[in-house]
Image (cartoon, rainbow, N blue to C red; front, side, top):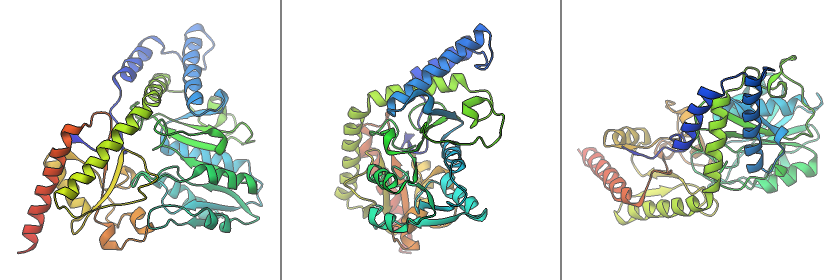
Amino acid sequence: MIYLDHAATTPTHDTALEVFVNVSKHYYGNPSSLHDIGAEAKQLLEASRRTLAKILNAETDEIIFTGGGSESNQLAIKALLSSVDSTKNHLIVSEVEHSSVRNLFEQLERSGFIVSKIGVDSLGRISINELENLITERTALISIQHANSETGVIQDVEKIGLLTKKHGLLFHSDCVQTFCKIGIESKWFDAVSVSSHKVYGPKGVGAFYLSKSIDFKPEVPGTSQEKGIKAGTQNVAGIASFATAAKLTYANRADEYVRLTMLRSKIIEGFKNSGIECVDEGSTENKLSNILGLRFIGMEGQFLMLECSQTGLAISTGSACQVGSEKPNRTMKAMGRTDEEAIEFVRLSLGSENNEEQIDVIIQKIEVILNRHFAKAKF
């Protein structure tokens, strides 16, 4: 099986696995315990916090550990909103956010907040001018993802950060797909969400940066862990493994960006040379190197994904958190595609174990599936 779904999850790095096992065996204490075994676990927890803080150019006490990227998104936004005056009840979010953000904003809207949604153009980009036009005197917070998990299109979060500071607003960004792949500066944001299993760490671990300038209120008073934001004993082994994987991925980011950009270009070129009618969705100028959001004209994405799986290719039809939905792809619809076009969407996402030798196999297998499908369609 050629694995082409790294935007959904990555295999855990061998070194990160070794750290997980070692910490589980030898540093099993509760980091909140006051005895020496607990203190050793606490030291590892804080060392891991320092590692993530360094990657984000943040301070150590601005890193909060969670159970994953979705939880990071929701806890970060709630923490920010807890610091806002009750008269500020207007929120802005993009039309192409991850389901964890979208679902939370729908819940907030039901509870009385006013939510405005900023659209994207046909290339998946947000207009800063349109965003500014949505801001009112009652606007409290803006949440815009750094890069879309389905098309890989990167938003200009630095400009958005400057805009929010100009208007005195809070800015949260889902940086799950960009963390350790491209530069992220904490100074652009008030909160940033990241995840372990997108950077070759274990599942069930995440974190978010929360600016120390935010005077948040714990959702459940009396919670002692993670500044009162995330209750429960910290997963020290998972967190140490996450920090290890993040450090390794971050150190290799420049070389990997070049390598994956080359693979990505060769795959697109291979489809074109084979005469396959394929649309590479999203802006080509500002996109993550590892994500290919594609439409094969006349082929339903879900059917292609299932056929690929049977022939040894693991691809997806978009974000794993909304797979199973029979509705047209949300991101494609937001970019102005018709229902028929939106259901053609598939995503190939590359990672560390993909290489140039696999490209011909990928092209050949998809070409066989498409030819067989269109041959049947004639009868």
